[in-house]
Length: 261
Image (cartoon, rainbow, N blue to C red):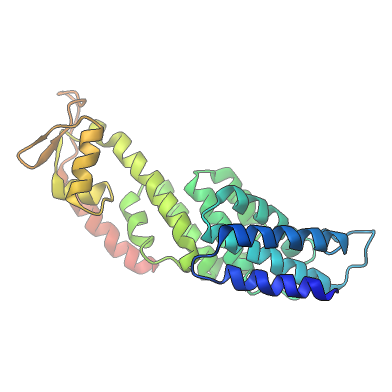
């Protein structure tokens, strides 16, 4: 393998491992690397080139760095492309080379990405590709727990479990997931409650402060009276969900969550 490839990969790795990678520098280096790898038959190994394990491992490591780069840059279009390119090195050449230490981390990020977009069908398709014994790994198990909470409608549970993701790299997907859940809660709030006090609303809406709650109320044209958000869309004859019942359910859930974690 040419010395130029090693030099480029080393520089690329250095850039990606920075806390805040330089987007332009990283993408330029990745482009150069992929062109050089393609010319050497390393990027897409096939019948025209010998399947040298060293070359396959080299290409896999570069593509794994590309995935991590896309996450750090919060570029989800790039993330999808890099995931699609690295997966063959896990599933098509798995018997040819030693298993990557980053495989479950990267596959786990892809699962969480799909969950954050509510692409449940694709989530299960990708999950089926992962060996059953690997599902107890923290990177994979986390996603299974999140999916179960989503299916149960335990949105507050999702907020709790997302406070401790298995990797800092999961943070961008956790933020997207919490935003999606928050939108679901907001969408049904005025259909479920006649009113909510601001403190309770802060917890239910997964907000960081009372001021954020007030901003959301203003955005949705929900009036605030005597420290409570008033939902005007609820029909008078509709059954209201008692706040004390909801709080009791939250406490029950917290106990169950302790068992899961």
